[in-house]
Length: 345
Ligand code: SF4
Image 1 (cartoon, rainbow, N blue to C red):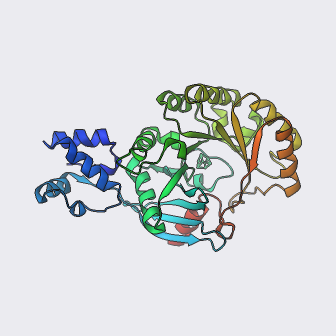
Image 2 (cartoon, rainbow, N blue to C red):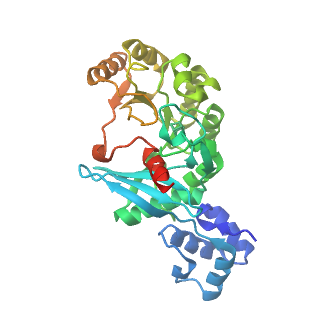
Image 3 (cartoon, rainbow, N blue to C red):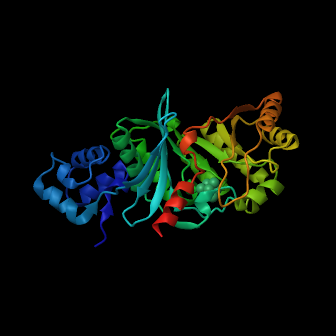
């Protein structure tokens, strides 16, 4: 019999699972609460009978991640984790401390199928989807290791969250539950490279999280060079899906724009971007790109970043240049994992 991962279940699913075992709803809620306190075994659920704990042991398990390695920035305490999954796969996560609390950046897949040309996470392709419980387990492990509550989540680690739609949307429901980690939707950001049908499906769910779009180009031509997904959906279709998301959720959309020297950081591109985003309730996050060893891209020069920013401002687009966190342990997303996998070989 295949065991069920209880950490991957929403409260409603757990209630149903327990009722099928002939148990009452309140028991399911007790178990749900235990699971999200970061316990690792049913034996730690001290308010359950021994019989029930044994029954759970036979039928279910609790997803876990272990810390394989971690790097802590001496500059600002930013902590980068390599997590080991139960099947031996490795994923990355980061905790950043801000005045308003701790933000966890977590992974949604092992590797990624999307093939963005500036990203190290995709170099070995997609290995597998993570289960909702493995997303929760990353946060629980970070809280335990960090010794503090995680108050904000960004789904920006390895993987395309909307390519793992079912588990990720289940995760959104679980993490928001008041009997669980109780992290407000407004404190959660999902970043996508632009899967248009899934953006619309997510909009229809009306879970008012923040949507971030990895845009990185103001037109199809440049975007196709950087991101294979642009061959499937045009930039106009993508922007149209953003309008749809806004209409359903009334949440300002963030556009991530990695500035790559000589590729997408010219004044003309800044004008095109301003035109594209005109009239959309949005915010642009300019990210001087992290160099990836396996790729040739280089960071934009400081003055070019300033020009780009000023053009957007001139056209009334809200814009910020992303502050570099953990500069001393800085590695492009996915690079730490790749290096680790190489050394493991
Ligand atoms: S940027 Fe995101 S979507 Fe693109 S390859 Fe990397 S992890 Fe995948």
